[in-house]
Image (cartoon, rainbow, N blue to C red; front, side):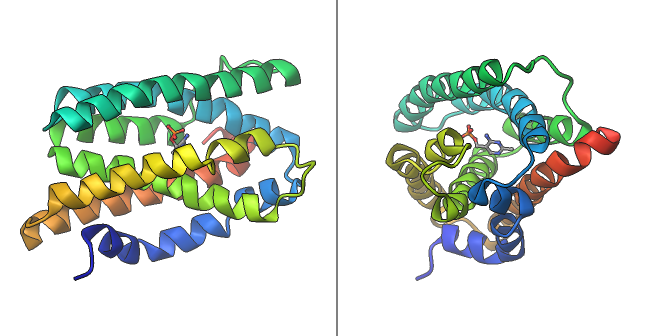
Length: 216
Ligand code: MP5
């Protein structure tokens, strides 16, 4: 039988294709993306990751079992380490991370926070998996392209490490366990959230290019 996670990925294939061939991901892989565009994205993703702490906190509060609670508690530590990567990079490059979120960044965060509170735990957990799996699969494309002296290596390594891969796989397995035996109606509603999240992931990459123009 095909797992629920495989079905979700199958239905989101157009978004996955878009992420993996996105000029941002390719430009990072080849190292040719403009620094302005990359730095703009860094400041926005820094906001996103900080707000993701609240998303995880909301999930934690509604966690259906102890295993998930401990897993989420551990992920707070990883996010803190990740935030340091952004901070060190911005400090080396001498730009400020104290910027306003773009409309896309804000909308994505608001979407995640609202489903963490208003929707079923499984739906919110599916959104978490989508965001993390999207990053793993996208940055893996950059990694394949990257030469040793790639200027964005620290970010590429962060989202393609074995630890991150294990983290994403754990969420996938748990999502399959949690959704085992769910009705078609429930699965359709999880799928809708998954697709909406995948769409936001694509928009977030687009934003890196549009941001300078009209602060989308
Ligand atoms: C992630 C991220 C991955 N940093 N930014 C976006 C827009 N989507 C997904 O999450 P994390 O917490 O950095 O692993």
